Image 1: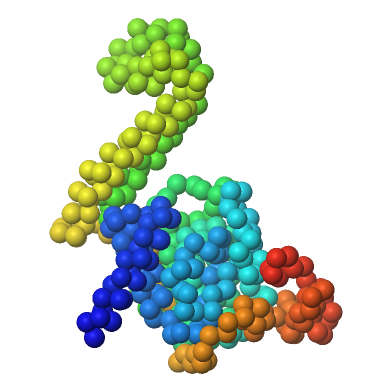
Image 2: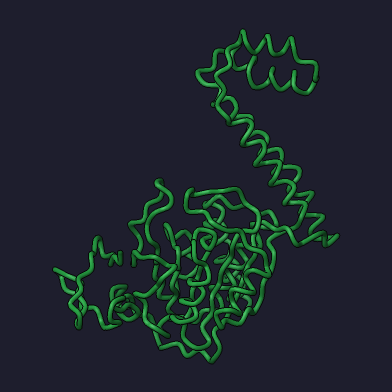
Length: 341
């Protein structure tokens, strides 16, 4: 029994290393996100089918290696991402290409803000989940705009609860990632990023003139740091220097303020209504029955959950085509991805 416990702990440590390689850390919000994903994976029986809706690059697939993991995304939003590992390419706001009651679990991680019709998404999740199936989702409450122009909303706990209840999902739990102190730090971090990394074409001569004419000591200091020093050392780009300052400021914030705010979070239960993220677990009414064993062939898993969006019939797979058996509608496929556009 003790040996099994050690093995589980070792596996958790390996998961955490992979998790941190994605840019996370051991702050309160990092640990809570890790714990959310670990518990989500542990709650899914071996062989269950998980649809990662808005999977992107499938960053969190390693938490669910015991599941039939299906990555679904429309394959746009971030030009630097590699979407080649997707299994299904399609609009997750519609999901009309996935059968009713065909999926055991759904995962959605910081994607909801990118959906222009979130209520439609919840309605489709409710439809495709088997009775008793669960949605594991976390969404931002306070982050800056990103993946523009596909960034539409921010969510409160009450907003998530409303979306669940409107679409016949039971909100099992809604919990925050951190506290108001962390919110204050994020504001400072974003402000520094916007100020420090903003390109500036001011020459050294003009900067010195501004310095001479400026009476405010703080503003004088700022001109020295961001303009005069980089020019003096003949930096090729002030933006490079400013990026260094931004990274330095981020290091200081992370090294000293994050532990302090974590301490406040754990010991004083400060304001929890302004977190970076809200974690949601929602369930479809009923009792979940998971089929036996793993479907090792990914294509078989995909075929078991998809349907023709037009007539809801089965889609036939061959080496040459993907075609609806009833209406004969053809679907694109590339690198083992089926594409619904």
